Image (cartoon, rainbow, N blue to C red):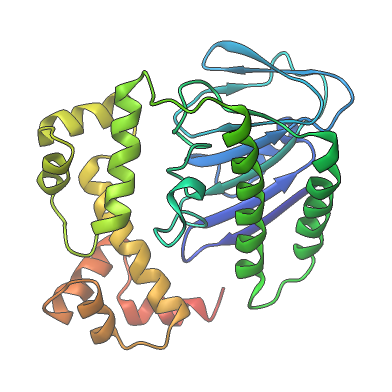
Length: 281
């Protein structure tokens, strides 16, 4: 079973499968996704993450980010996977503990493995069934419903993680800087467009940030800022009736012409062409 919600215009994805090893390469977007891996078998499952074997016992859940290398060479049983990217779920409106910057994603010293207690297993299985059912309802609010269900799944896991895990700051200070940078961009992208703005908040030099992101094969800090701005522009064009001029001012552009040039440079389309193109998706 492989289910996918994909919005080409926003480049956002949310996927669910009962055999992640078999289907993980078949989703529309593979890179830069965050994954929940859930062992719903009656036997242990062994994953290899960054060269280290990790054993998941029955009804354990682990989160894996796009900074980590995941291998299934030693996996003998199918494992349930839930994957999504920042474009689908990672907005500043979410509380920090249940956002992509929370304790389940980038926020703990060790790989966060959550045990689902027997008394809560029924709730988790029910939510999973509702999630699968929602994929069968392709209407205009399906994306909102799926996002709500994902948030609930994250909250349920976060509550367990806070009970079970000793949450510490990362030993790897480099990944912590990447985490904080992404969070700050979500907070300030409308008003701060320069890497130097974020470097100052992180007490680092712009060159240090650029070198760090290069080490982890990430987009450059400047590209992340521009991509976040472009993503919000796409969302406003797709989900609101605001005029291009209104969107330009909301995103911090003093001149709508500058916004139009920026948007075309980022998407190869003008804002109006982007809106027209959505009608043919």
